Amino acid sequence: MVQIIFLSIITIALFVYTFIHLVKENNTNYFYILALEFFGLIAEFILILIAKTPNIVLALAILIISIILPIIYFVLEHKNIHIDELINISKGKKNKEKLKSYLLKNIEKYPNSYTSHKMLAKYYEQNGEKEKAEDEYLIVIGINPKDYETYCDLAKLFHENKKENDAKNLLQDLLNQKPDYYKASILLGNILYDNEEYKEAILIYNEALRYSPTEYYLYYCLGMTYTMLNDFQNAKEYYMKAAIINSYKDISNLNLGQIYLIFREYDEAEKYFYEEINSDDEKIQAHSYLNLAKINLLKNNTEKAILYANMSIEIYPEIVKKIENDDTFALILGKIKIKPSKDVKSKINEKEINVIEHLEETYNLVENLADNMKIDIEKER
Image (tube, rainbow, N blue to C red; front, side, top):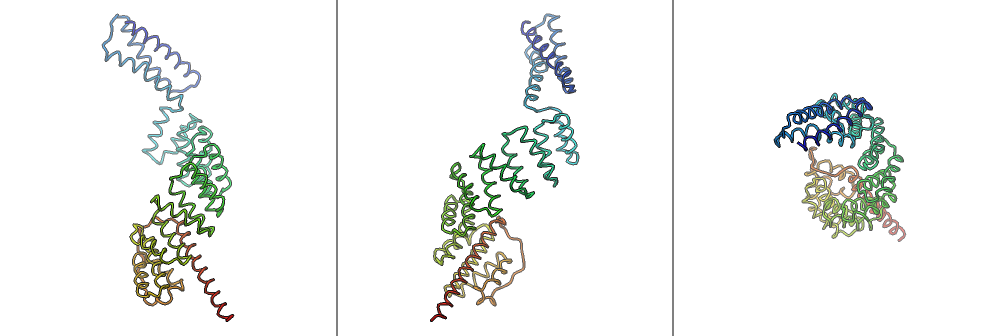
């Protein structure tokens, strides 16, 4: 009996607390909590009146209804999580066309709702309303300044909207707060790279290496960045490190082969290209065969050059354009078999294609300079 009286006192206190919140906030959700507490109080008073100690099942049921559920509700409220808001979100997920209206309804009732503002930002972003998405992401950060993921989402959006200074400043502010946040470092480095601010990108990637020395992608990014600066010695070093860690091995090996080709170290270049003719990525396979064809032409092994060039086209028919535009292949152009276009299995992105093409252009430039120098020397003789 003492336990029931004690439960009644707690329930009455919770009832008064809930009623005060109802009057202050005019939130209809409190009616449901008051109803639960009321039913709990009725049950407790009946047990007190009949002076009967309930069995454990009934006591537990009263405890859950009158005390545990209301406490859970208030704890969730304290964490800015609202039951009716979650119900609306659930309805919106089931009916995508009404998701926006449910989220706006939530925000009207709970202006500081972290969950609804973040979902609305994602909704706007996915539906191309990027300015509105930016505004919502800013609200999310204002509600929860420790949500580092949202900083990155907003920075990506700024970058897509060509607001480069906003993106860079936001990420730099984040890294000042949390210098070991890998995602922000990569994103800022990549934005600087995309804007051809290669030296600044190197500083960011190197700073990130202090906190994430085993992240292969950082080494690969540094390799690409040094490539675009024509610092092939440093590029080679970082590609090798990325390949040793083993992820990005295929594309790193292809780039390493191309760098050795620029330096006319053909045997070393061949080693890397031969390793990648069995790559799972068909574009890497095709480029490896193409470079092997080039090396064999330089070594006057025409038959092998023809074989490798045709194997390259077999895998990736579009690569024939490179052959047609490269004077190195002029000797065997008549023996090249054109193939119809087809889908190619490849994970190489546009940035990586640009690096491959930069290395090819650098090789051609070096060769042309060497040929011109040779002609000039012969003329002087």
